[in-house]
Length: 164
Image: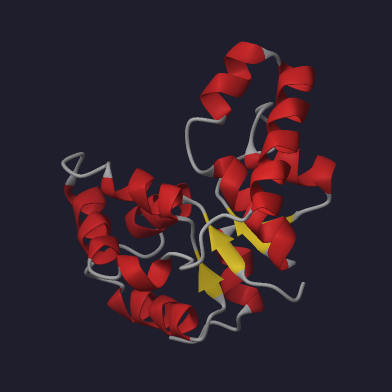
């Protein structure tokens, strides 16, 4: 992998609940931010919106919402989605529709997932998600079909040689 790690909303939310709670594990979030500053970690504005839309849903979630809001401009890829990205998103949607049907595809396409996959593919990067391969229309399933790498938060941390 030569590109960046494209972080899904669930990695922010899950990461702030269990392994790296805010404020108890601020060393982790400081390290995470340093990887953002080094252009190794990025997200899509739709994923950041999913995190910030979770405001008011519990103490841990509110803390990650606040953390993300104050760093929003650096967490989001500044360039808009290209025509090439839009085309790839269309191909991802078409695959999902043909393989899983319209109801599951509509749900899957509501959020950032398709854009994270497309941007990671075009960037030569990997999507970071806590989604399971056990459910049908999930990031790992679509990534595997299109040859896009994906990681868990722990694997990304390991590959980036996290030290706290």
